[in-house]
Image 1 (cartoon, one colour):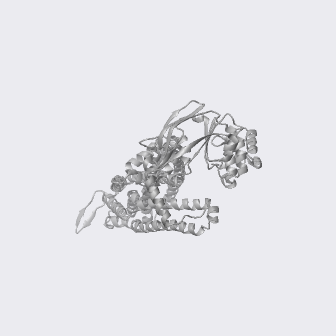
Image 2 (cartoon, helix red, strand yellow; image 1 turned 180 degrees about the vertical axis):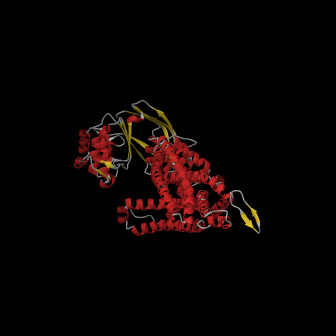
Image 3 (cartoon, helix red, strand yellow; image 1 turned 120 degrees about the vertical axis):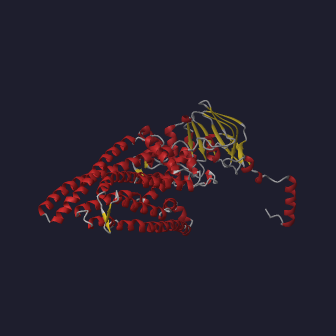
Length: 630
């Protein structure tokens, strides 16, 4: 067993090493180039630092004791075979019933141990899942990681799959496989000595010559299980990659279905059901293709596992038959040898019987460790040649000095374009109202993200007051699930604000009808329209009353009357400094802000033609096409 287990691990590590492709850049890979040993180290480190470590270690200790007791009981049960079958051979009715009583006691004890072990297995898997899931969520929701991971390529696609299904599968399969391996090892240690002692008395007589082979049945069991292991490795070597592909394709299909369901009104209005049907059917076909290949690989593996499983019924009898027919064994000793052979073979064939689950476990381990590795390596700042410098300003001051925003990550502004703040040195005092607009070609959202510290691509310096004094209001409101009171208090706890203040805030933003539903749990992002969701955000402003508020085109798209209502609502917070990034006439008329301007900086490919080129083009155009009437 130790030889086969070591051989299996060595093959797994070598398979990882062979699959490495060093010529591919990290950002172009779906996963990481990590060995099995390193992946196991990552997960062990995460477990060792988790809060469930103590519970899992306690349960594991009890499990080991239960498995040891079970193995001892199985040895006793195997020894029971000899007197029981000997009583049958002698036709001794009294001894027969006595042995049945002994069997009842042994079997009853083993039954209790089996039930206890099953419960301990499930509880261990439960706590393992708790530790793994909480660790992944903690890593995922560290400041800015989730947002940056989403833009990091395929590794950031469908994180819910890795956080939920993959973590559950990994916890359960790890628990099952580790305990199975442990139990098989203990069984092997328990029965290999028994089988060796039994087979040492096997005397073979051929043509008048007698001889014995020390440990004859032990070597037969090792050969039988080793041949099955080698054949299973050859037949099932594709299962790891196929399982990884299946998990990935299943996640893509689930995301497509969820995305279509959440956007069904827009799809229906655009008469796009047929297009979505083709898209979903394409993902279904991808899943089915992988599943078909996986089914064929599992079918081929079944030839090996099932074939060896059926042969084991007669193999131990065939192996021990020469000694039995030569008179060296009684029937009871024969059945005892058969039982010991089966126990040793079961332990040795653990890898064979679990090759499919091991392949699934390795695929899940790869997905989870890749995801966790991507999160751990996610730096707080982008790796840029030039970036915006951030500095701490006084609580009543916000500064913008020579701010230039680059349109793409990691590129120069000459190559990809961008924009700059025309006013090179801006100082904004607390309570001041500002509007920042500019050229139509400018992506103003990047300035909003830059001020929030999420887009440092560019140059210049942004001086920010203490972050606790600031509130950023994006264009698309986020309304979390749960009670309406929880949604209003987000990201604080619901009890952070008095009920009377919450009701007053709802009334001021025109959502008086929702006051009676404050404690109602619902998908408010589905029940409320976009204007109502934005009104929830303004109600939150009235509750928080931050010293600084940065808006990202929040009023655009709202009904004109509602825009004016919300703009007037902001006048009730004269102490708050407000920076509105966008083009809202209501904000301009009601708050009379100081206006700053963003100037587009085109890339080389967008540079305007020279005066000579413009004149020549205009002349050519005038000659070819008459000017349209105005």
